[in-house]
Image (cartoon, rainbow, N blue to C red; front, side, top):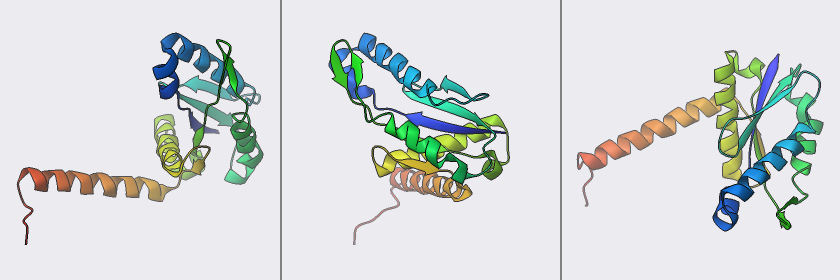
Length: 160
């Protein structure tokens, strides 16, 4: 059983200050630090610009993740030494268990991504465990935004 865990860092400010070469070195350093949290049978991959995903084997309940999450989050309290500079990065994590999603790997990754963005919305250094209500809330918000855009385009609003 695999449970995707998405992590995200904030490399955009580093890119603006130092450029792509430093960001690439930083992303490699982040990957090396994240690799330290792999257990036998686990995998780590980069899935976006500054997003990584763990596939953890044999996790059946969120309670089994507490120490592991704390370890990953704690590993970002130390600076990354890049080009003789100390660079501090934050991390947010979205966690999805296949017992909650009951679907294929793509759906698990999407669920972890949904949870990660929910964690990001709460601030730096947060994590969020996916639950099915998140999908319903995301769909409801998307529908509302679409309806509002359509109402604006069709001039359905009026002033009293």
